[in-house]
Length: 577
Image 1 (cartoon, helix red, strand yellow):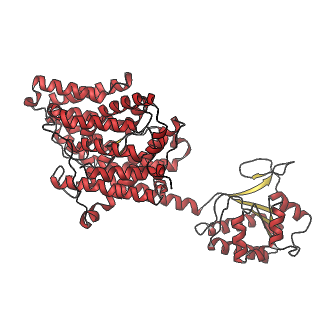
Image 2: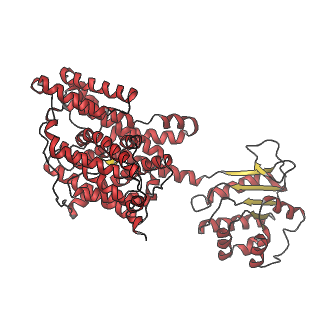
Image 3: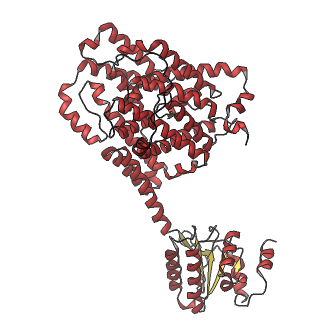
């Protein structure tokens, strides 16, 4: 194994060009400026003091610089992951308490450990269990909860955190008469600036602009004395090295949450990384290495008091647009965060919480997925139902319940679909040797004594009964004239024990009726399994053909009923000519 495969910076470092340095430092500083308000705001979503958002924006990006394969991706705190942290830990400790913070830091270690193990054992494929509709529904549901939880901060209302949107709605109804109008003005005005900046001047750091304006206005007019809540004191200085509380008890309580965050964090990161890869043709993203990189970033970050981190799409887009050439840009972003922690945290004392709420709400709106539901409405109502169930479960029952419901229903739909695969009866296109589905094409030639059946799926234990029943049903429609059944196996790559027994039952059932069975399009592994099982002795090698036309030609010459005339090895040589 090459060392560069473990430490990708050795690879891109060899080809690093001096002209890239300016791009990387500019992009890094731009993202760093964006990370400052994001880190503080997302820590609020997670239920943590603001300083921990800055710690998470400091360490993980620097670690990712060494281990990551994406050259533009920006690592740090993320809205959805922060929400899951807050929702998951709120059942274990009081939000914002010392015990809550200890859990959040330990959780970062466990998330990193899971991701690192998945990377080492090359298990990046596990995210395939999170289908696109599930991800979309869960993300949109999380965005609704994120935004709803900030209504109180935006309007100066006393509303408790909650992961059920209906409870938040009733809380709002009861508290709406207590709106603090100065706070509401600050929050709504900040939202307008963010929206207008994003629409008309997207290259400007809108979040930083509202942070600076909000802080200056609050300080100038002493709005904190008029009831506007501010951040207050943020500890100054870099985080110290501290071993997280990793023990059996914490793992028992945090294990399932850590596994969930590990998968979701990787899913977010790999989707962002692949998006960047398509825009650049000078490198390849390696999913398993990305798992390891995220694992190291979270594990090492936990020793410096950060909570779980992952990629941010908006930050990554800004990083790319600012001209980042290598992961070194992430290191420069971390340096800016470090300087902020050393010298600038007192500036944020007068930062209104309403301003942070506006940043969070606008960011949450960006998580809403409107495109996919509209597309699914056109071509896949089943996936649209899956998306909707995941969305509604997340909104009304909770974060973990939402994603669990999505995964369970996805697997259920997959199993159901597997039990009833597509099976087509074929007819001949006139004056050709092509055969197509008689239900989709008109004018096909169909013989009363021949049935051609094509299975458009794998044949295994979940669908063997369905396949047998369909073949027998098609045969019954033909009636007593049926003499030949051709089974087209072009889509089958392997056979399990249930499939072998099903084929044997089909062969025996129709043989007793005097109907010949022929197979076409058999692939090597399938042919080997048929031979090892002994079933090929019944079916016979001279009843196996490369395509449908060969089978029908042999039938027309009346040769299918003849005894086996050559061995298995001779048959292999013949079809491989």
